[in-house]
Every structure is written in structure tokens, then in C-alpha cells.
Amino acid sequence: NDPLYGQQWHMTRIGAEKAWDYASGRGVTVAVVDTGIACEDHGGFTKGTDLADTTCVGGWNFVSNDEHANDDQGHGTHVAGTIAQSTNNAIGAVGVAFDARLMPVKVLNGQGWGTTADVADGIRWAADHGAQVINLSLGGPRNSKVLQDAVTHAHSRGVLVVAAAGNSGGAVGFPGACEGAMGVSATDEGDKLAKFSSRGPEVDIAAP
Image (cartoon, rainbow, N blue to C red; front, side):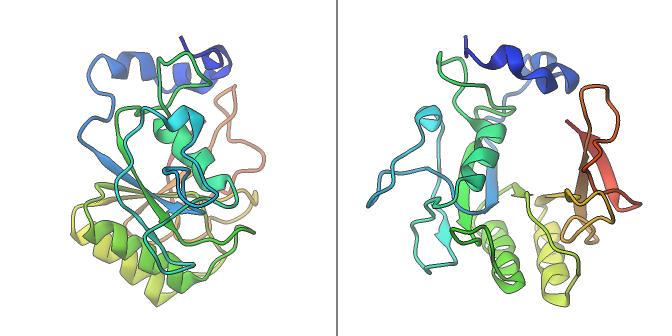
């Protein structure tokens, strides 16, 4: 009954309705390594309206080095909503895995920028604190040993590391191109590679 569901053409494309007959993410913790998530009422921040029924677990803020990984930019909350915003609540849109737990790991500041070291630390922290899936909707043009080692560490702990291929229309960025990460490129409503999407042999799957 979510009012924006009719606009979410991608849900049909990925077979979400059939999948929900079998699973909806329950029991899985997804870490969103990004700008944070609107997961709590703290200071001047409030929990996102369409995350009200979504469970958030404790996270970490690598920008301010504390446990309050609040989102002062918006991107991380957008990503988190795509994954697991509250669903069938007559508000907004639906999440793909709406019963999954969200773990906010803030590695990007209010301008959406961060260091490779913080991204790597965020990956390691999430892997060591109970995430089964780590989502990285971020990237840069160059690999580094510290980033690759973090992905390898998470992979060794049985964690699925999912990373955007990038939006440059060129080569796949990192960590999407890291060994052990699932690189994801973007498709359009015609199931064609989106014009903006990065591309290359490091892409493992394409999705809306």
C-alpha cells in the first residue's frame, strides 16, 4: 500500500514480488558504508519517516569518531531506503529487503567526501561487528592496498561486499573493481546498460 510503489518499475524487473514469497531480508544485517543513515533521534537528527518500522543496529561514525552515524548529507539514507525502507506502511516507497536490519557506518562527510582509509576502516568495522552484507554506493578511480585488504578481510569472514561500478560511464571504480567485491553496474527501464554507468570486466551483475 506504499503510494510510490507504482513508480518503482525496478521492483518488477528484479522479481521482487516473487522473491518476497520466500524472503524479505529477515535475519540479515546490511551495513551501509556511506554518509550515515537517519536511524535515530539524536541531537538535531531524527529517524527517517519511512524508516520508522525498519530496525537499525549500532553503527560507527568514522568522521567524528563516535557511535552516532547520523546522515548530514542524505545519500546514505537514500541508499538505506532502497535496501530496507519500511514497507506496506502506506508511506513513501518500498525497500527491496524491507525486513533486513540496517547498520549505519559513516565514512563520508556532509559534502559526500571521505578518505580511502576511512572507507577501508568502515568495511573492516562492519565485517567485525555482525554485518552479513556491506553496501558501498561510493568509489574512486584508484585501488589501494588498504582498500583491497579491507575487502579481502570482509570476504574472509563470509561477508558479501557489494559495490557500485560507478557513474562515470568509463572504467569501473574502486572498491567495485576490487577482488572479492561484487561490482554492480546500472540498467535502465529497457534492461540496457544505463548511459552513465561505469562498465568493464570487473562488473559482476547489472541491475536497475
